[in-house]
Image (tube, rainbow, N blue to C red; front, side, top):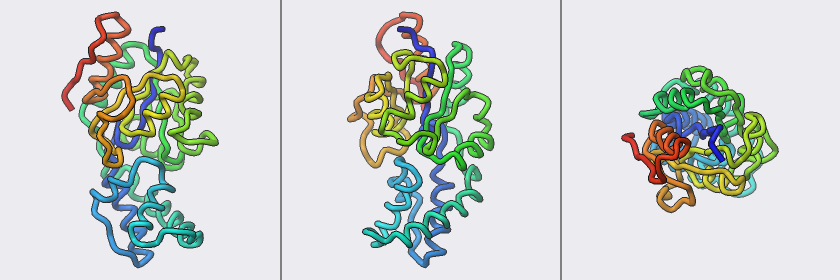
Length: 235
């Protein structure tokens, strides 16, 4: 069955958003009177959505357990600060624009599938210049479940008019790999994103590609029947 659609994760796959997330996180911590975290520490906690990030950040500060009021205050403060920082220092990874243009030339339909809330996802896509590439955007609050559940990926396929077997999911984390596997969708992993310190070599994916441009080459080869070995590009 030929590929007709590509689903892409956002943070850690298309954009390096860690600087913005770290700025918002540390502004939140300052308001709470808690110690700042390094950008590297924040990066290690990203990948399962905003609520999970904040819970992990508070746990690092010894604030784990049932502290509903603190969690709610932290969530509100983070949202306030992230609206200000979102897209300010985020940068595209190498090969992203080249890959997206290659997908367009192949006539593939594109969707973003992210656990980031809509209120942050859509402004980020606009500010980064990526919005025009995508026919569908599935955010962390679009479906009742988030990745690693398959529902967001299946919703994206339905919106694009593609069967799961006609789609490829490209991401950087175990959430993306598990969601794709559960949905019956082919999966590619990039090695440069946010995967909670786990080596992407251990993920159950169809292949590892070094960039979105390399992912486009991988798909192109399979659409044209030019072999079964992935073409790894440069990051």
